[in-house]
Image (cartoon, one colour):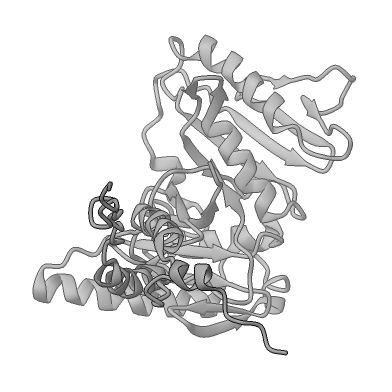
Length: 164
Length: 179
């Protein structure tokens, strides 16, 4: 025997429309939005960290600057993304000057000087150096010395900023 | 006969939830936009300014440079596999062990805090006496890695004390040193 539908319960049912509860989602989104606005940087990424190296960590506060990009990765030394010398060859060079790197740097310096003469954009001799954190000092100093001797005396070592 | 209580008088008003759909639309657009431009790893740079090359590669012009009349400290920190040596143009600061480094390794790790504190001590005494009391030279053994160099630079640049940051020797230069 079927039950007779309860008369009392019939009155209790609402309009039948179920509304989604979006309030908690809104809370979440608001927090996310505030966080993202806080980390938002107006100048974007001036330096693209290379993929095959891990930069060292430091607590400097200086923001990155634009300059010629010299990367010392595990395999290659790159100037503005173009490979110029194998990193493994670096150890075999006597003295502090790396000839191939110097040639590449001087080419860029020359271009910079030409631009300065033609358009008045000042050649600053800035170079940003990205090196793996495991890079031994004897190789690092060769790269630095070569930069210094190739019209790029203003060196910037790129590092990750420590949190907090 | 009493009247039946009015149904209208007792009707409760249902609160209509605010329409947040437009707000949601805004969020859905804004959040991906900000996510794409967010920087999660903050990069920084350490400045390392050399004077433009004054000497030839073989150092021929060194002799013609003006002789500095002021007293120079020439504070040098040398990173070795045994620890830090602190030296100046006059003397090497000796550590507790005879002939050992000024700041030895602690459990196989470099003691940057002790280096900072030691340099702070030197800074306070040097600041009135020497003209180059902001300048420090960093030397390292060939096999010292880049991270150690950077951390040593951090330690010699500033000392973090509770509540304040004491500037030590912000003018760091690297030396090719003794190979």
